[in-house]
Length: 165
Image 1 (cartoon, rainbow, N blue to C red):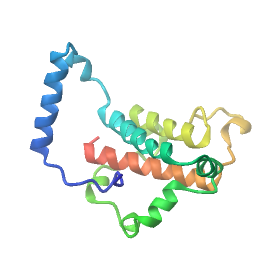
Image 2 (tube, one colour):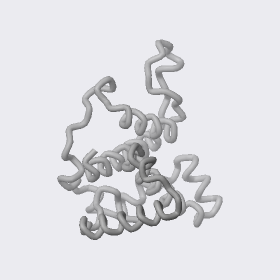
Image 3 (cartoon, one colour):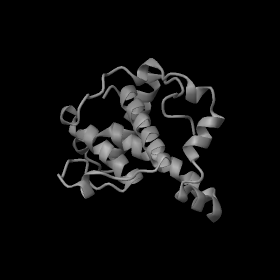
């Protein structure tokens, strides 16, 4: 699968036409288009891309899955090595169009939700709010988990930048 930040060029008119066809079919099948208006589609698209990437795991043997789980093998690290120089090049302008929130308090609810999802997946952290207890607020994190989480956050930011979010 192509890296999330280096998409193929998109023919916007053709994409809109295909989307219109999908939506018309959805409505004909009894779906309510109004229900689709409030859906956070960039986040849903990111989840779908992540699900599709997860399908790669179904092709791997148990020994490789155990190594990935233990952190002794990094899918992201290996993919980055294979994708050089693309992985080392700066992201295209579309990945950095909007300035990120400088502080947690300034982050949108959607961004907070995405970051919490990443934290849960990579660090087994249930909340990202201070709870004023060292045992709850400080976590020991493996560098490979940190690396994977940073890659996930970067990919989510690239997708959001492409979507104009």
